[in-house]
Figure (cartoon, rainbow, N blue to C red):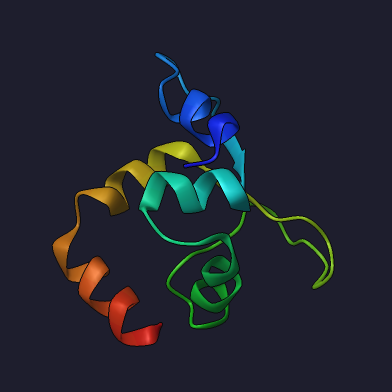
Length: 79
């Protein structure tokens, strides 16, 4: 595991807005899978970013998705 990602995941209080790479680590998937999940409508970035702009995600929403078994089934099917 990437040491920076491991350090991030071990934080006591995660930031409320995280990048796509950090979101991937939190959800247990690869960073290259995040754009596919966004394209399929399974993840929603904050705001209205341009297609080539960096995407940010709300930590609370991702933590809810971590515990949602049905969402993980949909995400696995989409990937």
